[in-house]
Image (cartoon, rainbow, N blue to C red; front, top):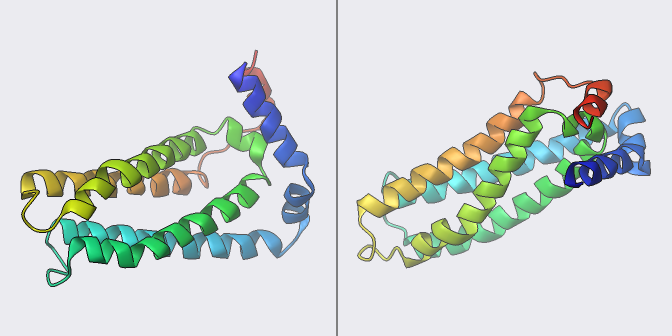
Length: 174
């Protein structure tokens, strides 16, 4: 039932006016992708800066909670840009993405990375006043964060190498 609903959503995206407009335009897809990649660069930078601080590899003179507060608008803004641009890019080949294991992997890592970032990672980052958590907590938290966000990027990169035909998607539902 859920698979069928997801497929119908993907078909709706594929047939939407914005899906057609981006797919049929010579310049819209690369234009939207530029914003997606800029968002990716900013998000990746904020993730690395904050996690390097947690591991005490960089920004040692900065307070972790203050650094996190300074980076939060950049992180949230880049996530917003990536969600909007990613949805628009997805809408151009939504049915193909439905059956693409690289896309499924990317979405799984994205869900896990967001949940982790705004729960466990946030708690450790905001409480890292230099005394509450030792390296036995801070370093694994930072490494897991980097691995989860790297999984999102690698899943996204895999999309260019994994092909799924629309006909194979309909076979999945049988």
